[in-house]
Image (tube, rainbow, N blue to C red):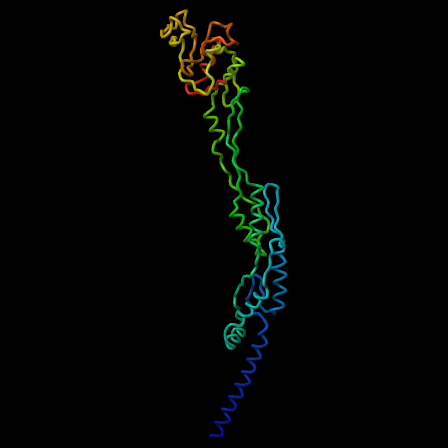
Length: 346
């Protein structure tokens, strides 16, 4: 009996040794191959040796990454080459990790996984490096070329009349978005490497609409030219001949607004020496001695725009500070302006 037991045990050990050796040989034969289901950056490398995997990754990952990044906008193009971006990847380390994943577990679990043809389903990301400074430089180049500050609308008033500059929207590249897009594309062999630079519109502080509201109606008085110009919506609408204040009683220069309006007004004579006995009196509208005819548009300190029957004074410095107009002209002007409209006397 003892002899039979010994033979049985010896036989069992022999079978175990043989099977163990076969299992070891089986596992060792696969020690230099990556398990099925392992991929790097979406590129399958299962069943390959490390050398074969490196060659495949070089073709399918690194080669596409050598294509330049291209940013375009409105016919302009900016490029970032792989050389300038310093794109590089440690494929050796990535393949070593893939092989280590394949060798996880003990000899029995690896053999069982292989016999059952189980896949690891492990997708490793390649360790691709690049120069962040080069990306920032590209974004700055695009922004410098595209960005434009908004321009406020302006109005300039001088002896030549009214000159306006319309507002213009500004443009600003969405730099953060562009940087994210470049970073996402620069390390991906499958991502598009050409895309548009998106930008946002910047509104001016003062728009053309704002200026039109403020300067919808403007009167400019050019004393030296004896001319009153009416502007509507920043465009010259009408020009009228006028008389202005004589020497010593000049029509006051400056920026004012129409303070009040009246049809066939009474004349409130100012308390001035030139008024003589009439100073401080009120002359009725129908009084022949009332020089304010037809219409009145008050400006400043008793001065204003009015009609006159002294048509011969038009085109000269003849008044006591007011702006005289032919009666048909002052009636026409009166109906085209409102209290509060600006008037510039130059």
